[in-house]
Length: 255
Image (tube, rainbow, N blue to C red):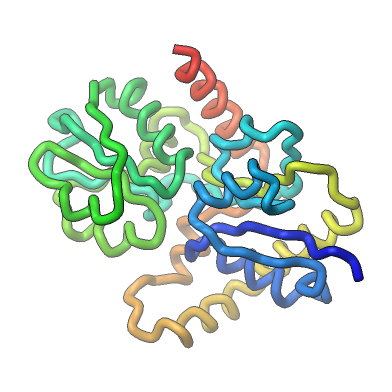
């Protein structure tokens, strides 16, 4: 029996169409073993060769010795993404401290680039631990990413959507995560993998119906979020946005 290809996928709502495709397209589900993790763990698993494919934060790609971006699908946004937010009770110019969410290093790096180059503010950054959301007060803000951003956004006076702020700054879309491997995979599998992702995106109504069935009390407009906030195609503009971000990140890391 052929060894299954291990995949680490982000455990957020924005990945549901991809997971639907991988579970329901042809017989691909028999060839793969899917694990669901927060973005930073997806990256660590791929870096440590615990999986073969990861939907990883783009800031982590350089840590792989032989990275291959194997798909023209990604987790991206053109404008508001709704799930990568800087939350504060004071305007950005008055913020002194920011708790950094431990879920994704791309979002942390994006925040630092925007603070320095877009808002031009000097900030004291605090590596957040579980429960930090309750400590956001006065001139201490917090970066919150993922599904819990929906819950916390309504509690704060100022909500800065980092994808929207990047668009204002760079005039380009933003890519949060891409499908990356740490080794060359068979072309036939990669083709089927991409067909499965596409199948999921073509069946968002079914993805939404499945979600509502399991989460009847959810007040998240999942259909609008998946169709309007997340942009899944890794097109030319997104690649330009990704290249610019990675170039700026490299420059920051040299300092």
